[in-house]
Length: 113
Length: 114
Picture 1 (cartoon, rainbow over the protein chains, first blue to last red):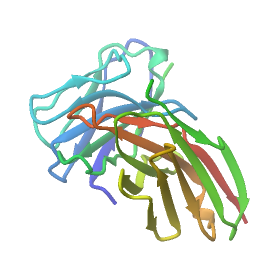
Picture 2: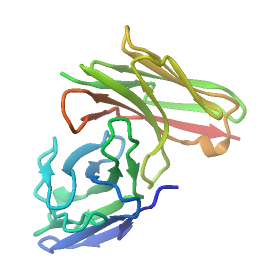
Picture 3: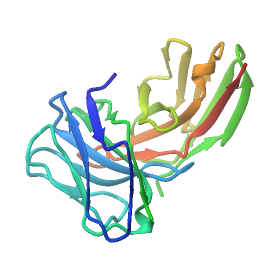
């Protein structure tokens, strides 16, 4: 099993709250990713990072922001949550080599009321 | 447009039976194709990864095939178990960027009944 962790696993909050979803990995991977997944739908890349101080937006536009101050840590922040942000958020990491597998965390199920 | 299409959308089989899941893709240029298993409420876990030159790869009871000419892949599950109940996701990577962009299918939801 991969050493990548996400907290919290489940979060129910009210509209307008600021939230941070935590993701950490102990594999020393340079690449880290955030995906958004709605039930029965494909994963959509919303943010990625090649390494410390590197962050890029993914394919799906997202109002969230990320930071990469340490290799092992890649938190995602929503400044003001809205019901449209309700979704599952999956964090993943992988090495720099082209065929490296992406290892996924267990996900955070976010519900905004 | 780069796309990954999976079929069937859902499948129910009895424990002990075999099944085959399909994946068609239009991703170009092609780098590799991966099959992931995603249990409900969990993150995907890699089952197999195949490059252009590989046409079959096994991982226990899971066997993936790849036909790069027709841009099709299949995942065959042998002697299914209740624990095989999950969503199986086909993921294709392109060579078009240093990121190795991944294109995800919507998955096939497999349910194994006792």
